[in-house]
Amino acid sequence: MITAIEIFSIWLLSFILAIPEAIGFAVVPFKYKDASYVTCMLKPTNDFMLFYKDAKDWWLFGFYFCMPLACTAIFYTLMTCEMLNRRNSNLRIALSEHLKQRREVAKTVFCLVVIFALCWFPLHLSRILKKMVYNEKDPSRCELLSFLLPLDYISINLATMNSCINPIALYFVSKKFKNCFQSCLCCCCSQSKSLVTSVPMNGTSIQWKNQELNNHNTDRSSHKDSIN
Image (cartoon, rainbow, N blue to C red; front, side, top):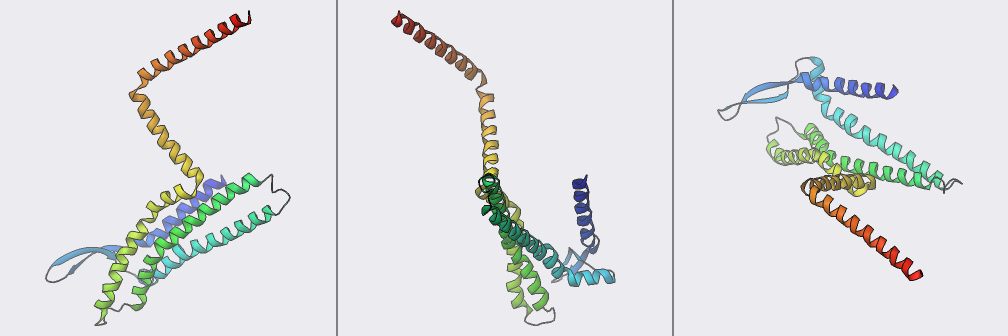
């Protein structure tokens, strides 16, 4: 029951945090070089949305990037200290297997956190630089945009790749994930092979077992004759 409440609370909080993004974006027409275009962008219509637009980049950087990293670092440090204390205790032998599993979990979590930081930090950096340095009225803003736009495109693709990199990293870091992944592949391969060659294999296996049984009986009879 407690787990269900926690899951419901997480989904409810996620839904509430996504409301400004859902109601703040609108289709905005604009003209560029005598041509009309339409784009979807954040268009504030009230004071709250104006405040959200000004604080959005810092809010995303603080709540969605810094806070998860800080929480993970704190809990990872506490987990490491606990494992070190368990290592020096009298129950070291009894808890050795349990400690190995916890070390593997800690190593996996640490690897995923590092990948998360490397993939998402460039995106937040480009947004904050644009927020602090870029000025629409600056005559030399094109030079800055020539640097910020490629950085923004690269960082968006890198952030999107985070979900693709995680399974690959888990395969090399977590032995349990690697074994489960290989077992799934082996099961799929074995099932496909068994479907193709099910009848001949069954016949061959039966003939081989009968031949092995006949050879075993022959050896036993010859052994008895030699004794007699």
